[in-house]
Image 1: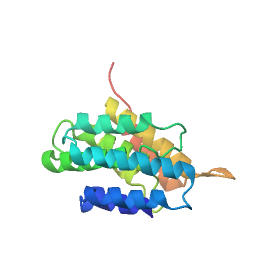
Image 2 (image 1 turned 180 degrees about the vertical axis):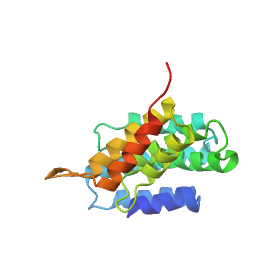
Image 3 (image 1 turned 45 degrees about the vertical axis):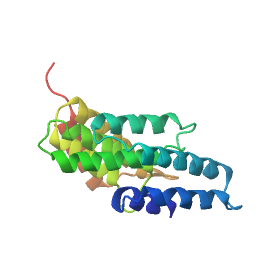
Image 4 (image 1 turned 180 degrees about the horizontal axis):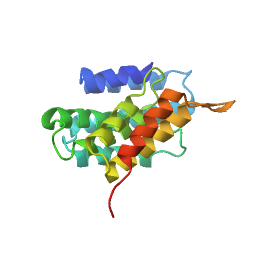
Length: 189
């Protein structure tokens, strides 16, 4: 799967130089559909830019990458900004490794990491975005960040259990959502 290769190259091996030629080879294949060909070109351009000017390890840089990628989407399911989200997730992982969970901005970093994972794409075995969003809630209960993280997490869970027969959120997931909603609800004025 292309996204697994890209995730490994960006976040694990950090071999950005190898990605461009691989994407170019995919782009040249005659069996690639037009939207995917467009995505490949944007991803290659994004990687080339990151090689020339690596993103700063900061929450602001990660947010800017996520927003820039989001601005490329023409449809809700559009994956054109995936490479931006991958690069943002790498920045966020690096930021969290350098600062840790005790840093006051850590909940925001986890929230942004959850948002980036949602933009990268759904993991059908286990939601990485859900783990990060839940971490944001637990690190900063009763805050605006927790509230925003819960809204994203709730939507992800409900959409994940929606099908042709309606929405059937299992009891254990419903209980998890209920307890997180209590933590996510802002208190005070």
